[in-house]
Length: 253
Image (cartoon, rainbow, N blue to C red; front, side):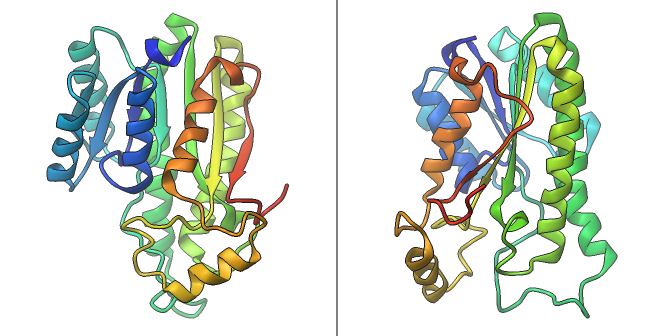
């Protein structure tokens, strides 16, 4: 299915990488659902910027009822169910190397918060969209990971562990859902310059990344967003269960 025929849900779609992903899909002609939880003003501004092909909907991805209502509202508005899910929402986390909890401070609740955002949130969106995807014989699920799983240069224990679990989720779902025409992939960016989540990162850290990355630059959210579009496009129709690292070559698989 061409991107222009798809209805794309981007969780956490009002800011940072989510916002750039929404804009990238809109540029390609897709109809886009901008999911948000607390950033109503930014979501509505983005909706107005795109126009009739965008719909901003508030929903907590950890709440299955809210997610189900969001999918139903999208179907009613666009006249077609969601075909493509981008699990991007980030719950209560900032990339702050100075304030992060070390091994003696991290608590199970910290892990649980991130696991609920990454795994429960992704499971909820999949459950909400799976029936229509199976009926259509087409679906694209794109999970947002991190290159910290391969190279935990900064030990963000709770965040990185949740994304490692999301990789397992991705591959298991890819194996089971492939026969229905549904692909499930992951895109793992590096530290992006800049988003709300990375705003606490010092310029010194960004310069260190620039110096050690083959492309000699920090990845911009729009560059990751374009790769998200690739996984939704016909060009990736034979690709599933993969984790593509998009960080300028800092981590090479």
